[in-house]
Length: 366
Ligand SMILES: *Cc1c(COP(=O)(O)O)cnc(C)c1O
Image (cartoon, rainbow, N blue to C red; front, top):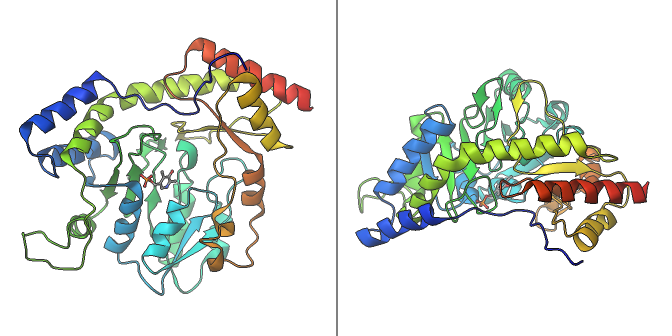
């Protein structure tokens, strides 16, 4: 390989973020304060139709505390996909509840409502879909099922800032929704998570849980965590929020170019009514995926990723929850997916290199 590697992901952090951090450092007040409060209201207004947002120090903490704030605990079951980052199932397990893994739709990689229906028991309390790769999960069907069976809906929107379904933003469907602000996500605060809440009760519980159970100093109402976001991180997040729409548009344009020019692989579909924000641009190859990915990296310098090679119900950490589970669409996706670079720093030359690399490897393998 004699050309530079096109990275699979590339956080964009520049002078504006640096200036915002300097401003907070110069103030001498760096822990959770006014920047966090402003970030919460700007995020809610811009991304979740004005819902109350509560910032925490990671997306994982957002899911864990969101579930606790909604009253999930030991004896409960929460239905989640297995084809996702482990934080989805981990957060359920951390509450003492049981993650129940359902299968995905073969085309969109998101929860399959029929599999969710088959997974409901008398202990099921909630369904927590993931808007995987930035494509909205089928919220209409899942909400209808939840209404029918008396279940609640929560959203893992870690990868889907700005995605919409039938005009409604992801994060505005569930009782709560978590957005991750990790550096490789569509926007970042360094580390962090934002939880959009449907009710003031959940928002208040979250604020208590992130701060040792205190609303008033030293008058602790419950046993809580320190999961606060710092004003330094919030300042970075506020700058990123102003750039998100432009970056999303670039991701969508990059995806459209790949859709139009890739050959011999299955490109990611977008369902009617959905706006995909392409956290990942994920193709499928039907044989020898690992060899395909290695060739892209080593022969063509195209950074790419496999998200996720091991379904959660097969992980050493989570498998005991589902010893005999068979999720065929999940297993198949785990063997076939490759995510190509789609981030907003790609040049036209990068995009052309990605296309020619994928098409060459696909052709050679055929
Ligand atoms: C990134 C991610 C998380 C966890 O977010 P962190 O901010 O890294 O803790 C949870 N779920 C999904 C689907 C993710 O992609």
